[in-house]
Length: 395
Image (cartoon, rainbow, N blue to C red; front, side):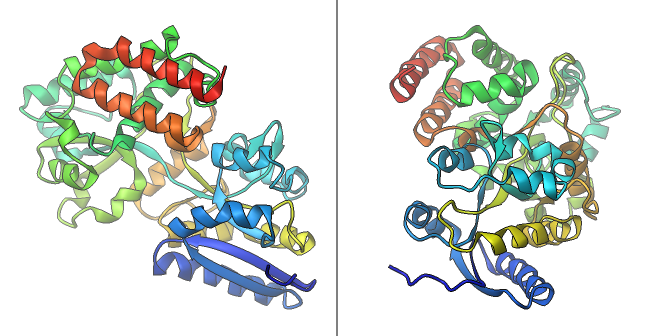
């Protein structure tokens, strides 16, 4: 049992991956110490994978005063168990309702906010501008008919329209998320993620029917289940495939030679009546319910949740600021992602395996791989997923 920290000391635990992430958090802590010399800061940096394992233990026994974590289901899991402090008053007091409007839903559980968002990243369609020109595609497709037409033109030009890394099942989950968000909207999507909608529901089947149309039209590379994300990116780099649905976190790995030809656009609108929602996984900070120094914890969150610190964290973490008033990033792809997320009216989903319990997500993604290899098995796959849902959620 760690001895209790004396009042006036603020204990913060940060999950990080790599030296650059640690360095940007350290900068923020240094600025906080300068602004609040009366508060003694005690920071623990923990590698992200170890952090996930240790977090439940901290929260239930002797937690620090502030932790970093994720929004959505990952946050709700602890809020539901009474292990996170209600931050609704901070949202009102600090104008987070204005600055973080697009991530408020993901930060809420039963109408109360338990998270202070920091950064998020956009998902959308990466594409090769030169291949679009070669195929005679005049503009980025904004609607589903325009997208299908672009795919047809690419195939006619001997270019595979879309690369997908089906061996990494989560890359398929990106396709499921977007087809569901565009056809059925975020409210339905979240109910499905929460296990309250049967997988045999006609609206779920409609998502797979739209996906099957793409498979039948040979939109995707052959044998997509043979490639993981690292193995599939060369299809884009070598000009063999024109597009890929992915998060903006991959841009760091683009070769300098093709970087000027890489573009990025919002996943096309399928039904204009459905409010446009996006995948934008949000990183966040929380005050544990059993924290010893909540007064200074609230001061710290107010310090970090500003447009300037948001932009600083985003740059250092290779992400986007969740604060809509932060200065837009310099990089053109990040700038497009920032605009897409900051202007979203239909809500922001956290991504398939962050929006639902792990066991259901794993089974769901396994089903997607089976569907990609044999779309004719769809009804059998959905029936199996429905059995799994009933067992897990007992609903």
